[in-house]
Image (cartoon, rainbow, N blue to C red; front, top):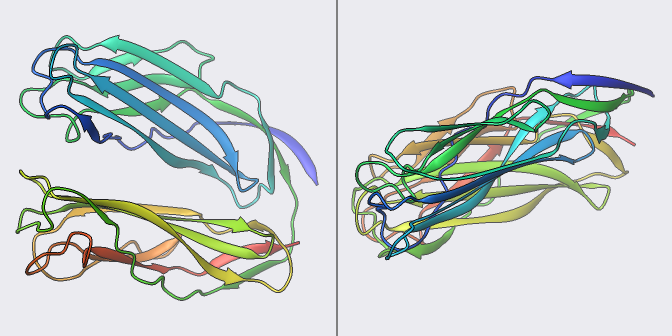
Length: 291
């Protein structure tokens, strides 16, 4: 086992749009007051995850508000068995009041985790839960890591059962207006010998009355007969699309990642939110190191 120091250039996060949690969908020139943050942490021994938070609230009645957190896998290397510590900064925060309809670039100094928060607050028209959001650009990140070769085992697991997320807004019918769908899957080790998958789905109608489903669930997808030291395969996949028909949609990601394809049910004939809209996950082969 060898400990070394590595400095990484991390790609910016996807653009995160937090859900609307109050008021109507229009800030209407009253701010909003915006707070954004990013936090870096180690998971599964050798992965770096970024947690991105945004809160945007109108400064006058009716206090339109959007708030939420998203998590992204930003670094993983199969040759790294363990990240001992993050030697650079692990948290950045910024706040401001939006006063225009332009994208706001919030610059931070060297030494911070984030180099820049790229924010959209107010726009022309509706934006809360639709366009208001943030992308994080990072400064270089320095780690102390360990590398150690070991026996690698590769398995093929069955697809997950169909996950149907909860109906959280609007009526139960998308009615041909999308929905806009986001799906993701991640895997992690539990109880030393088990591999668990976490599956998330959100589907939102693209016009009023904004029918929406959202939720996540966990499945145990594999149990080994001896302890697992670490996962070698990628541990996170996500994608999104807008449904334009009543058929199931196969979103093929291909080889190399965690997920080979997401099989999604979006809109159907009749009511579907909370009853038929859902996702099945088919995985690529999963590799891990035995302890």
